[in-house]
Length: 191
Image (cartoon, rainbow, N blue to C red; front, side, top):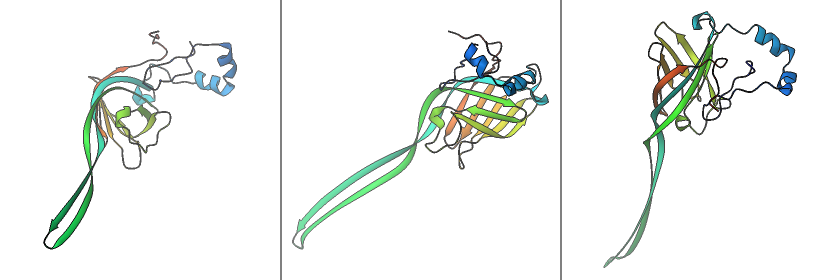
């Protein structure tokens, strides 16, 4: 297996690429140097090591609801004939339950997370479903950060380092689940 390539599919499952001559040829000398100087897998997160987590869980997403109503009436009397109509549109929110998988990694004080799709707004940043983490704090018992979804939506992320519990909470909803450490080089594919 090629240890230099890591990726998660759109549903958050790991896809490890098999070594092949085409991949080996595509690897540049810069890639080889980067892999030679890659951080030690046993290095702690505080010492600049890499932490990969895969988390399963559920939550509720806040979704916009639009209701439109029309009314018309006619009045006829001794004073004459009157007709009227009214249109109304009401915007609100509703909560929608969901189950999803979250993946995240932190390395050298930077990190990214793959958020549950149900919690993502229409207008968002990110790259291939991954969102940058900001304000990362790695403490003895927890990791906290903000997820940079867009300029007005920055949910709070918290991972308990002892229990593996994860929570993401923000304008778009809430998510909670359980995380497992994921080591790409040591993980076998399921199929």
